[in-house]
Length: 138
Image (spheres, rainbow, N blue to C red):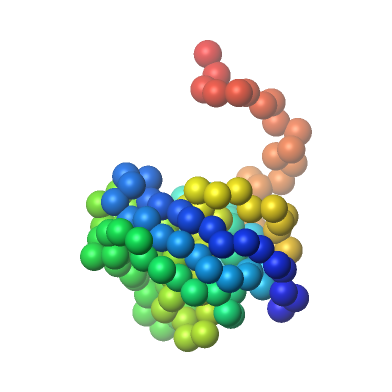
């Protein structure tokens, strides 16, 4: 993976119980369309940052973090026990996976690639042509 230089980042879960800091660089930013990621996000894809060198520091709520590994796979999701928000995952040795949406600081990179595109949801086509609203439509 190509190294993408970044600054340190902070993040949290939706309810604010879990707070963390990521110190180091990300190696990639992938949009994963596999069926496992579709199921655990409830969306068309997961958006994850990957690092082989960054360090994760739990600032609060580490006891509220739990993980689920799908039996027979490497698919793993870490999340807050209270609100269910996706959180950084350290279950794969030598790889830190950060769901992009749990970061509170802006990231300055765009996704590196779509992965597992052969599993892409059938309704995930032409979405850029849909109407756009600033908030909930009336």
